[in-house]
Length: 144
Image (cartoon, rainbow, N blue to C red; front, side, top):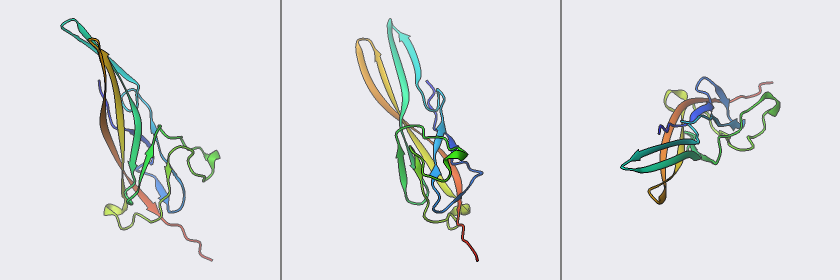
């Protein structure tokens, strides 16, 4: 069973983000990056079946804050204007200018919950997988 880190759709490494503007965070879902992922194996007449799915994603934002999301997040659309994400988001309060390379390292850590059964027994395991992107956060000021 292949379990990978989150397939981050947003924030994008090529994106530019702004202090005080809500950032929407979400992941693309596939069998290997979000689940459910199922597999079974047989040995010595005993078959064990397992199903794995992501139970939460913890985003470490690079600015000292973390956000825990219990789902894949909600994709942003232009009709959502600049409001906060209904499921998974963050608002930066400072720029990334002082960070290494001028970008915040954003790490998404998914916790996979794996339920298994076989040989008259059942159990549950957890595994963690990570993906990281670098995010540039700037500031906009109005000049009159």
